[in-house]
Length: 196
Image 1 (cartoon, rainbow, N blue to C red):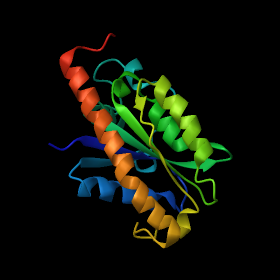
Image 2: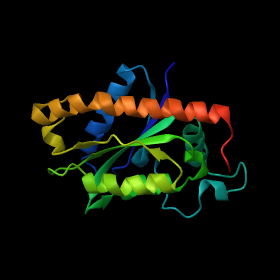
Image 3: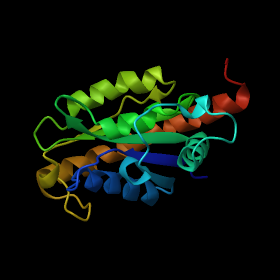
Image 4: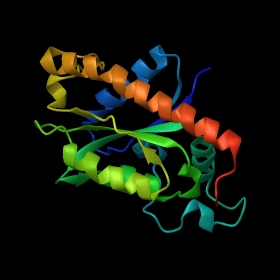
């Protein structure tokens, strides 16, 4: 049985290089038989956070928030594909994430980071780890970092060069870890209700 995984991506740039990595992750997870949906913060276009989804009266949230809340609640796990901006996380993805809280609880999240340079978004990945944990997700220990992204993935999201070979080698373990935590979380949620 396949798992429902949301791949979340947050760049608002006109020349988005990270979309290559998001598409690579989506393609490889689908090849493994997973049910994957892509959540593109730019396409959804939520406003800067004023009111969280839970702060609207029932049935009064904007349509985009209502739809996204249902997608998050229906997911078994998440993959956050994040670039690194000035040693930090992308504001578009962070803004989308902050509109919700309880919807994220009791499911695993995995982090895939990238940058134009050699550090592969490692600082953004580290920052996301604490943020996602605080928001009630279990962050899996396996991560993927890609950089320089233009020398690792082609425009059609296919691995190229030595970086592409390294990405291909690291992806199976990353996906296996995510799948293990998804199954563990499913079993635990089926066994007993969350404590709050």
